[in-house]
Amino acid sequence: MALTLGLAGLRAASPGFDFGPWPKGAEPAVVGKQLADRFVSRDYRLLKAGVIHYVETCTWYGALNYAQLAEDPGLMKQLVARFDPLFGPKAGLVPPPLNVDFAVFGAVPLELYQQTRDERYLKLGVKLAEAQWTPPADETSLDSEAREGIARGLSWHTRFWIDDMYMITMLQTQAYRATGDAKYVDRAAQEAVAYLERLQQPNGLFYHAPDSPFFWGRGNGWFAAGMSELLRSLPTDHALRPSILASYQKMMAALLKEQGADGMWRQLIDDPTSWAESSGTGMFTYAFITGVKNGWLDAKIYGPAARKGWLALVGYINENADVREVCEGTNKGFDRQYYLDRGRYVGDLHGQAPALWCAVALMR
Image (tube, rainbow, N blue to C red; front, side):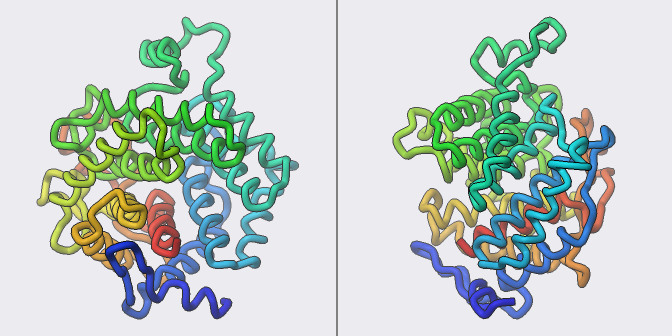
């Protein structure tokens, strides 16, 4: 580990708030290295369909950002080597752009392009981003939400589930970052507004889906992280930025009220008796850190909450660099007990990814 890496996580200043110094073992650069190394030590995480899982994408993206900020060429070499077989013998693992969970994979080659300038990555990433806005010839095979989306100029992947806010906007935002073409960030912003209008409730939080009226932790986390990523790249003069920023700030105010004294958020955000859940906590902490560092949130109020969230999250990472108390993959449910009874995993990438994002955000 380079000397600069060891120093990078000791103190992270931000306008109006100084996040550090950190207790030993909680330095973002140190924790980020542990999480990234753990990621590259494992084989691809696949969906039941036999293609790369969206949580693999999310963790890979975090590890790539970490390697760049930490100036760690050894890690970067490993992350590039992880992709090489996907251009050859393992090309079948690349998800076809049939839905949000598949298409988001494009965020990885688009990040690799930004860091390496290898045109192969750009070609693949743009192909997936374009496919997300290119509906099948027979639209009658699509459900009503997808057809509504197409009629509004949205993605045919539109289904108004809470996690889509990250999956759709992340791919399009990455395409914008890689190409500079405003059409991609316009798509992301339009999609975000449509989801905000449909799912955000008066209290600032989000239902899992219109017919699933529960404030599930990680589901809301996808919204928090998705808006944060979009706002990082959305031009300050973009017509839709004010409404997206207002919705983000409304959500952050609601989350601030629901953070536990231990720094964690719960499996059901509005139920203080439900169990402390790490993946949602990581996503909310990431959104707080990003908001404070970019001046979207009051640093004096949200800075201490972000620091408390990070320190709490670090306490859920075991000696193997595996995050514990991670809610298993969860489809929309129709009663509260369904969410309370979800499996609680250790080392699942749903939890590894947001912990990495937090380390990266603190190092920026």
